[in-house]
Length: 362
Image 1 (cartoon, rainbow, N blue to C red):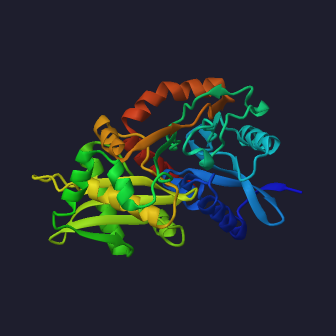
Image 2: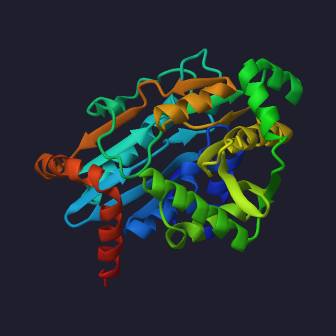
Image 3: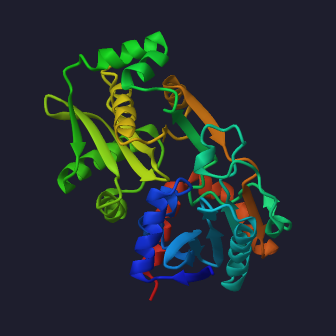
């Protein structure tokens, strides 16, 4: 008989993390280390597990975003179960709603990975939209964006190809040309594993993000998460150097039996070194070498970034009717919506304020 409970027990948390790196429906966004990373904003988290005979069957990890008089309950990818059990899945969604109300949240949302039955990524979620009674009083979509909640996967499918060369030949002529040209630029490819190297790569990400006008967390805010993800959780940092100087890098995070492209940066050079093409091809080859059935090159980015990602035979596999939210305190939530426009324009400043307020907590 299955049991379910909230837990902080290290052994159960370790089993939870293993569930998310070994089960197809797992997600790196639900790993305890990823949830803990939001502590830099003053947010907390909790994990609810369904188990039977000591085996984790599923559950959810929630980030509890709280500052001033606002509190939000966010399940960024889930709940999920390794087995098809509609009743148990409904119970999990009901638990999200009940728990959020119990601890005084004004808002909660879930993000269920429902795919169409013919989706090439269906094995990494549910292959149909499951009608759940617990969602009857929910609204579709999400309204709180400060905890990343994906819309789906940008899937590079490997199942049709027997070899790297066969996959390469499936790409357009100009893409193959750019990949091969990048390999003739004299760059040195490295898999980064030591802390000093990781800091150098992450600082390169941060410099690129700052100069491009989008915020990412600083090394001091995110380094503990990175080091934990590197220790037994298959996170990969790849970089290329020319004459000893870093020219491009990417971060790949493992969850659900596949890699997700999380961060990337390239230096602007003339002539173009084509570091993006070089590194994404290395990511694809590496994913194939460990028998992943695909690679999530990730959704989002500017139109230029999206066009670049589309070079690699991507399939935008969006979650179908999986995002739902509840508002428990309408007046408070209206105040949040009024302030939301300011938050969006000033995400970096808000994160600094959140960290400052967190330091003031007793």
